[in-house]
Length: 226
Image (tube, rainbow, N blue to C red):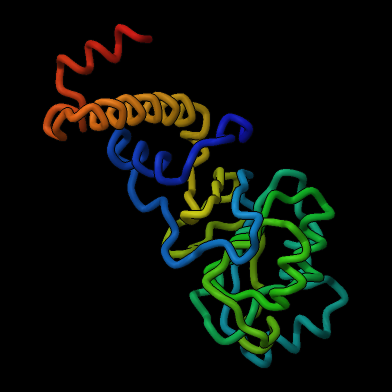
């Protein structure tokens, strides 16, 4: 189903969510690409992190079970986007090139976090979409404790549910509620066509009051082309 989103911009998708469906709060704040691979689409696999607390960290370290941090990364499925809630923490990274390489090798579509990432030269060499709020060289355990996998998270001030469609491009990251994933692409492609027609008319000298949005006369002309 995510193939339906190929070629659709986050700006267009968010416009359709907000202006045409009345669904707001779906574009992440302060999260953008840190590598040249700045386009992805996939289903959300989530990891929620808490601030590091020594006793909880020691209990995880003493356990024979892998930590939620490692479970989320090692368990990524083909076409999934790893979305890491990092509370906007600016003083430690949630992963670097080695862990991102594991996500890529497992067929993941990308990594998104409102925290930081590290090993930037290595990440750039991976040719893999990694979106974050910035870069910091300190490692995960200095500030973070992975606590829960596949649960609702907050990332970039957006609620993300497991299975939501996550779309990233040069503009940022849009979160598509999974219940709308089937209908939104057609709506977005229609909006692209409308915007293209508006641009055409504006280039011809038609004023905004007629061309954007289309007045009834221009809308009739647009519909006649379909």
